[in-house]
Length: 277
Image 1 (cartoon, rainbow, N blue to C red):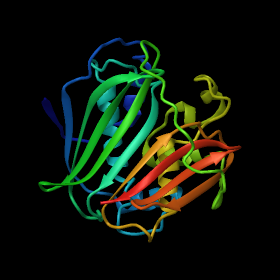
Image 2 (cartoon, one colour; image 1 turned 45 degrees about the vertical axis):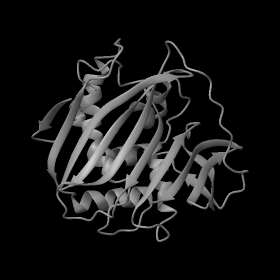
Image 3 (cartoon, rainbow, N blue to C red; image 1 turned 90 degrees about the vertical axis):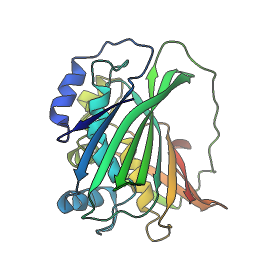
């Protein structure tokens, strides 16, 4: 694998226009490349803004979903490179698994590594994983597996999944219409499907939709104070959350930890588990 170390964080402001210029691609393999950025130190003001928009308490400890903010520019850079087989725009984030091996705090210098692997069939096209890791020194402290779907082409077998639980909410989320723009401000993820009804319609959505990683983060915030230092939070993104929205959030304990689901009108938007390490 070719390892390429970046001397600065990729600019998302330039990567999205680059993605727009590369809407047609074909390929049969993922690049054998890993992007690396060293010496990343979290900005306290940015962490506070992220915690506020996602519903976490203000703290010097990073939520398990926060390092995704550090990895996302490298993910974008990898998926907009010339040799990447699929166009970035139009891909669907279908699942995300984060493992926090220990708590991370402000002031730690981190190395973030990103690579793509495991291209495989999906019932609606092809899917692959983008693996992101954060290291403190030689210790891997955080791992993120983001699974993306490229629709079309040859498809794998159909996989049917049942709802995790009956729709009996513990809480009702009232999600404002501007949450896509607010999350975009802190995440840099300015995909037009999240920003405005007009731009969302260009990609087939009747209204703007919430970021999947915002729904995951907001779900994780519901468990603050009840989780061990080391755990895995694994989610599947299902029906998009059309903004504004009212959705039911259900959670329950399991022998391994917790399970949860976000749904509206008996249709799940997201389901997931939290497993103690």
